[in-house]
Image (cartoon, rainbow, N blue to C red; front, side, top):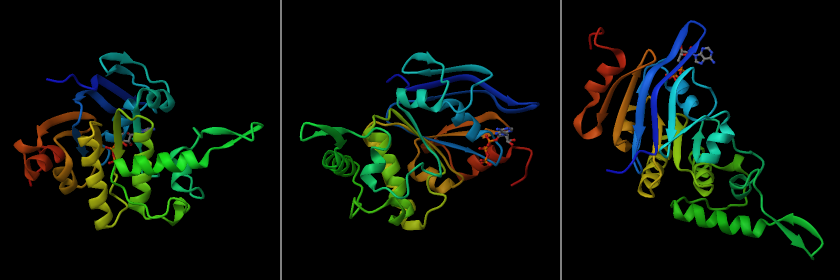
Length: 250
Ligand SMILES: Nc1ncnc2c1ncn2[C@@H]1O[C@H](COP(=O)(O)OP(=O)(O)OP(=O)(O)O)[C@@H](O)[C@H]1O
């Protein structure tokens, strides 16, 4: 069996007296989609922030590519290939898709052998390639991002991560703000990522979405991991039961 891309062991994080993530261990294998589920306040966001370098754990280990890592910042996580896409997408509204894909990492070329300028032709060519590779249709790559639909923006954000060699993609509620056709496109994009070997951790409140895309589900409640199931071996009721706890009657 392939080795996990990511392993977390006994991760622990508290905020004052509140334990947000309590001894959580999980793995993510190459080419799989893991749905991270749990009710509000269960600790899902805190867990992914520990994996993406936003928070430092108070205990436990993060092992990436078989090596224990200390992620002191989101930049360090990104250097390893851990890319997180939050709902705000971190795109620049006034720039076009290709400028966003290269944001902060723009290639320069010499102009008339004298001074350096942005190599927009290269950026455009490369953007076309990555969007095609992911089967993303954006009719006009020169339009500012603000004129694109929510699903297209999400897609640009994912394309950027893949272009810069994402080895693990973490997505926080990727479909929450989208209309139904756009949701379907984003789910399809998650499947494409899996097919191209990039594993995905996806947080969602939408069980239908998770059942449509994930291979495995991890359920959290009150900071703890309370269950882990292969999609083929579970169903809605069982997952809801784990999310709300056996003390609640369904
Ligand atoms: N920076 C912080 N400071 C203090 N408490 C925090 C902080 N971040 C999260 N918490 C608390 O930790 C607990 C877990 O929160 P977290 O956001 O991880 O849950 P969640 O499962 O992502 O919830 P939701 O689905 O509502 O986003 C909550 O009780 C929350 O109030």
